[in-house]
Image 1 (tube, helix red, strand yellow):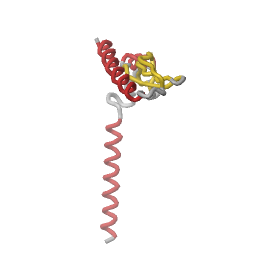
Image 2: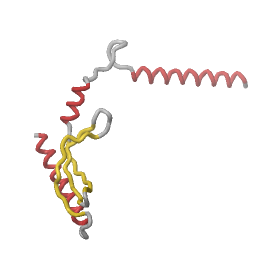
Image 3: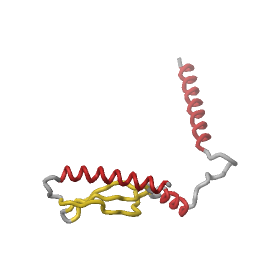
Image 4: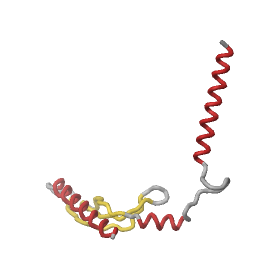
Length: 123
């Protein structure tokens, strides 16, 4: 019984080492040993991210007015969105009795406009 347990422990250790070795081997960069993966310098990474900036609708409230916005943004190196440009698309009073209808229509129009702007920039 003790021999069987010892063999099982040895087998599990070997399997663990094999899986660990495969994980380390597959995660290593290709090419010569000790080589680091090719990365763009910080400035070129940022320029590439800015080139992929997209227009998206947004909204906020300022001084009792709801603003529907068009924002051109990209994901920054820290993973957070960075806004390049922001345009006010429509405004209306936040206390308007028809606020929900106006907001829904304004956001739909803003989505359409963002799609148009993104299509224009892809050309």
